[in-house]
Image (cartoon, rainbow, N blue to C red; front, side):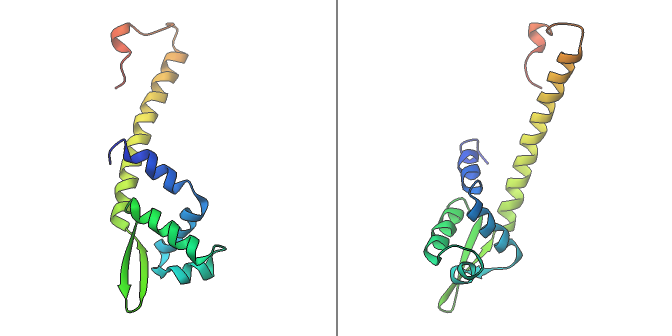
Length: 117
């Protein structure tokens, strides 16, 4: 995932209703009508949330007869999880470095040692 995709992805996942829809679809595929019956949101709003989730490839749609059924894209969610793990590890390294500097007796490391690992 590129760094330009992350802000959009976070914005999409930051909405409580979209998050509920994604979690629900992670349990079992459902139509927009099914989701609207289960969640306190209109069917029209559910369709808009599903379109946004499809826009970042977290949800797939499949026609089954007259209904369109949506499901969470497990492979995409795994990819996002891996990318977030890499990001978290980088922040852990930075925070550990800050802790080492704060706890050391030297006020600042040499200029050539200031770049991030």
